Amino acid sequence: MSRTTSLSASRRLGQRGVAAVEFAIVSLVFFTLLLGIMEFGRWLFLLNGANEATRLGARLAVVCSIDDDEDNLTGIRARMSAMTGGGIAADRMVLDYAPASCTTDTCRTVTARIVGADFTPLIPFFGLPLPIPEFPTSLPREYMNSTGNPVCP
Image (cartoon, rainbow, N blue to C red; front, side, top):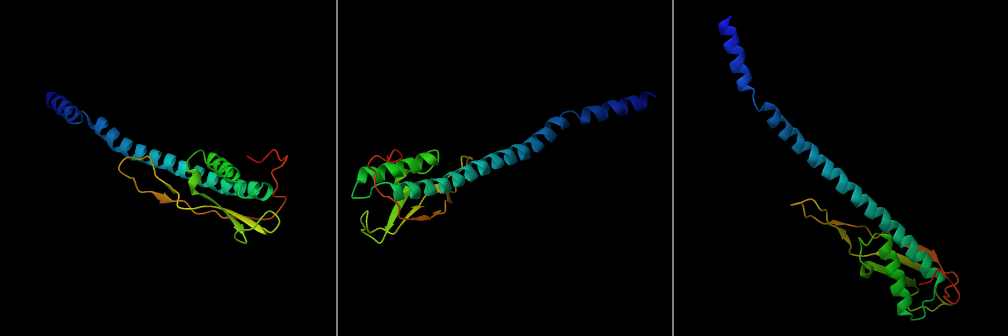
């Protein structure tokens, strides 16, 4: 009886700390997966914002003046950037009027797109930027006059 008691006690002493080691291994995998899911969600949020930003930019560009009004174009780009939550800078937003160098009366289409933007995850030591697609959105010419138009910047 004494022998089984000492054998049982030595086994218990040999198992001491095993739960902490198991927790460390499982938590490492769990927290890595959790951070990956969160970063993937941030990336999808930015992609959705980028898509909506190009739609907004194209819509504003077809209803607001283009007659060399750089403030108007800067305002449209700033609103596009704000649509992404500031995740994409306004200088990455491009508005293309077709044909090139057209006026309010001669433009046929406007295309809004994002050029050269990327997403850098916050995960330490990952640091690999992921490119963001252009998400081009084209709309036919509409009014293109900012006078009295409350949506124009």
